[in-house]
Amino acid sequence: MIEEGVFPHYSLAELHAHLGASMSTATLWQIAHDLGVQLPKKEYDDFRQYVTLSEDRKMSLADYEKKIYHPVLDKLSSGTHAVEQATYQILSNAYRNKGISLIELRNNPMRHNRNAEFDLDHIIMAMLRGMERALLEYRGLSAGLIFCMARKFSYEQNAIIVEKAIKYHRRGVIGVDVADSADPSFHIKDYKELLDKARQVGLKVTIHSGEAEDTDDMWEVLEYAKPDRIGHGIRAARDPELMEELARRKVVLEVCPMSNLVTGALPNIKALKTALHKLIDYEVLFCINTDWPEMIQHGGLRRQYQMLRDNNILSEADLERCNKIAWEASFIPEKRGLAAYL
Ligand SMILES: [Zn+2]
Image: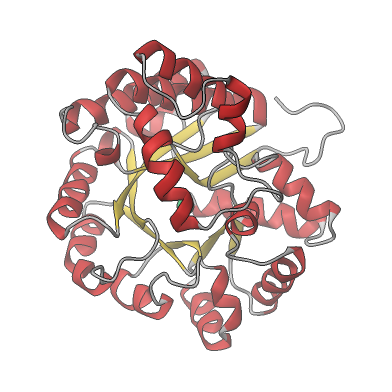
């Protein structure tokens, strides 16, 4: 619930948050101890600091994925028990404590099955149970899952992820994505047919692109993936022609400001302000998101809105518009809440 006098006073929509990095460190710690998993740090506070990035502890996207994201966060949110708990806790906590009424949570289900030790359908059903329970408990909440393919996976592995998204679409999988830092063997062009197939059953498409220097070319993403939205996309601000095209196609950029600052995708607040104002000048639609709300110090959605206002990066009117764009660009069916999937 939103405390009186707290900015922003309206209900927020979050379109870009990854499951592993949306669990609180306390939940991760508890799951680790439930399962008896070995952790890189023995003291809770050391562990919290180890997994959390901040202005003083930056790490590139590729390094964070390799050292912390996959070996710690994904591992701890793996298996049916952990993934159900994680999904339920993240969604209910967002609604109860963070003033977020609409949340799209993304993950790569194959990164939560402990290298195929668990059956993928069991993992997905566990996520959906966690989501359904949160939707049943909190009637004002709307939620949906997005399945991420991985640039580091083979085409065959990624095709399985899309097949599962199609299979569980009516139960709450609302879209597909491509995530992870760049890999030379990955070409978005190879995925055109697969993404067309996903779209035919009603799945929406968002693609991580234009984040770090080395991710795919955004022009190719537009041409072959025809995305409804783009994850990050902040680098478009350097290409006037690309911004014109994004505006023409009404593709919404899921901007993740603090994530870009702690991974070094943007060097500083000044560069963030310049990029966002370019997007506004070119009438590119964008919204504000967290990416890794619990793994970035003060990285919660409300704190990011406050940071953008307090540093004069965006005005209150700009921010209200960002939230409106997020609500309108959501992949969750119109009925919203639990009714969206009944
Ligand atoms: Zn992301």
